[in-house]
Length: 169
Image (cartoon, rainbow, N blue to C red; front, side):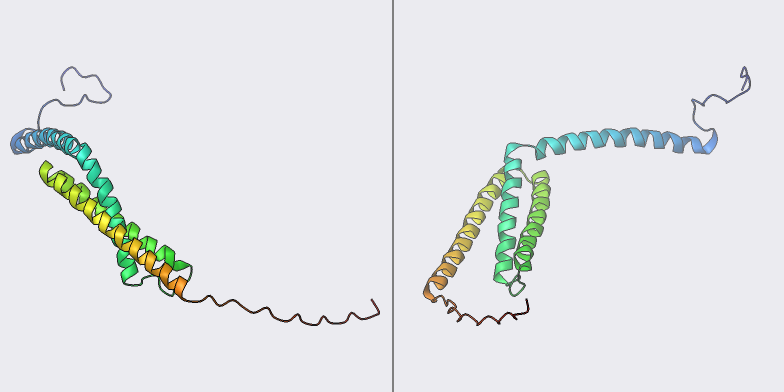
């Protein structure tokens, strides 16, 4: 370059000459537009996802999916005969179902219209009530079974005769 004195050359501020210039220009325009589209999409997405009715959808979906997962685990007897691990297995079913429910709620909140989200909130509230009623009735049934079966207490064993202590001690 004319007028340049040794050292590192300054960066070029123009496009590559020849046939590659159009590709560089296209790449820079694409990068600029891509960044702009991302900002617009993220703003639109966050404004739609963070509405109060969407936040209620997330909460209801989390609770409903957890209850459905726990109910499913109870129906298929997932924790039966597992000892202390049975409770953890049933809880695991609930947590996995809750995570899936939350992901579905996030997708629905982004794609669905406001009216659809309101209706889905009502449906999830009904689902929570039905699952709670099912689990409560199952609890009452277990309590009735416990009350009907007589508890068998162990009879005290007769005391064993202690061994005599040798006189040498």
